[in-house]
Image (cartoon, rainbow, N blue to C red; front, top):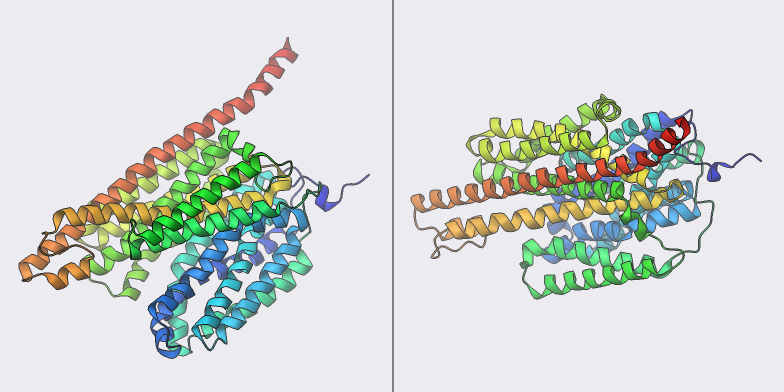
Length: 509
């Protein structure tokens, strides 16, 4: 009997005849989701003025989206596997479009916060199902290139978000930055309904409702602690309590998943060295990218004196180099030739070298920073698609949605961890170099407390030294972690090939 689409193994089935058109459609939807992670930042003055929003209101407007999205990624991926990835992709586009409409027409801060949370639900569904569909419609020969193009959208979204927001606010009111999503959602709905084939886990496992609740609460709590740490202090009661709740709930989640017959996330995946190596590498790429961009914006504005929009434009070469290299398919061509471990090691080494170049050369002007950004982009373009492909290929095809959820969760966690750790290194180094009489709560506060121009110059130099130290720390962490991930992947490949070699020798004998 002929297998249905839902029963086929997407890792061995032929490519879909309209795969590149489908990829373009889902990348457009993905880009819209990622733009909304950063586009609201430029609208803060308008929101404060027109909605009479307090500082706390603005923080929740920004964070409601990322908190809901990061908390629901695993649940969204599991739902896509169970109920159908096409169905969940359509649901995600619909929720995102409705949430965007509500956000654009919001009249109060509370309405906008609620709308952003609704958009986060749609965003979680889109982030997981788009990658799962890529795995489904491309065969093994083209999958790395397709995932490379898909992952390129992440870098492009980060770079373009503030620019799109700035352009829209120059010509329209703040609500337009949300209403622009609606045509994209409508086009996506029509295209997905007509083009994307349905697929799901053919075994139809029971839904893991408690696991979904635990993972959502745990991840949202951890991400909230990371987001609020820089503002409230890492040792504040709010941050410590939220982090403790998140870790405790995630621990219960792991124990629950280990002891039920139908887990949402099979913890036995973590016994697979290929999966563990790819997971470690994915966290560290996000760690290096998120942490370095957090530091770069401060270096460009506080040390080199650029305005916010000028600083945003000067970080664009990082994203543009990722886009250029992935669209040319460089990483996709290198993976078959060099192998996944070597490609990842090379990419992570370039990422570390770029961070080091920014640390050592970026303090004197933009030229050294530009070199570092381009080298970082080359490293990300090599490492990120190879690691995403390694994660997805280490998970059974029927669990592609969960695999995409794991990949998205790692990116969120790694970004937050990079900001937290490198920000803490910066703060510690800065505090140790600033005179105690001035205080070092932040650079602006320290400068305001300075007595004369000479003291202000010493404070700025101390901040630049802190940036250099934290960037070098990040470079070392990325390099060591990347090499470790490559070693784990290499060992996993050898373990996988050993039975084949033994069978071959036995057959020959």
